[in-house]
Amino acid sequence: MRLANDALDDVRRRVQQQTLGHRGRKHDPLYRARKLLVSATEKITDAGRARLRGLLDAGDPYGEVRDAWHAKETLRGVYDIEAPDVGAATVEQLAQDLQDPGLPPEINRLGRTLWTWRHQIANWHTAKVTNAATEAANNLTKRVKRAAFGFTNLANHRIRALLYAGRPNWALLDTLTPT
Image 1 (cartoon, rainbow, N blue to C red):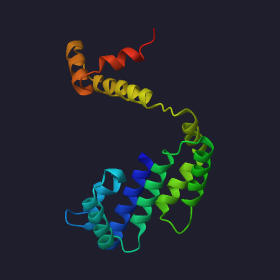
Image 2: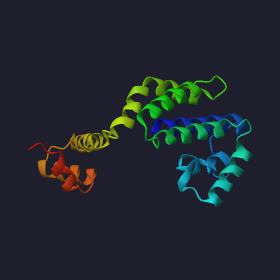
Image 3: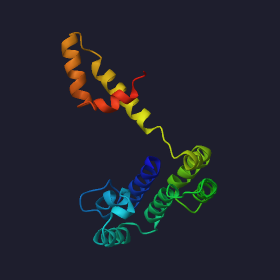
Image 4: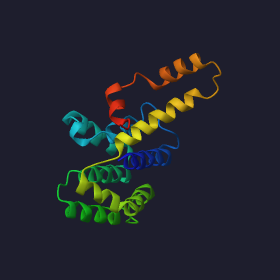
């Protein structure tokens, strides 16, 4: 999903640059729509939907940002599918559809990435498990390690590393330590 949001943001920036000739500014329609575009559709209110439609109508003359938004939302919908075989078929079809030459190049890139990772995405439908907890623990470890470089005083080093990493969740850390 991060890659889908990144592709959508890249399309928005490119269209902004092509239509107005500059980066997004406070009053530009696509710049004002950026938070709504990356929000989950079920979290957007009716007023937000109307605002998003108006901003896209004003700032997206060829519908490229709208296409990218629909691609992102379609990919989000893949994770709602319960049946593993239907989920796998949907991921493959979506990966092929997103490589259509009529779509923006950023969405074509997303389609190629989905095609490369289609088996791993389809496996999620079977197991309903991700490695998010492991990745979060690894990220925290790397953040602490990065903060620790350059400090010669051990007490100062520990204080700085703890301040940088934030308050630890001891319950989570207890589940991650080997027994």
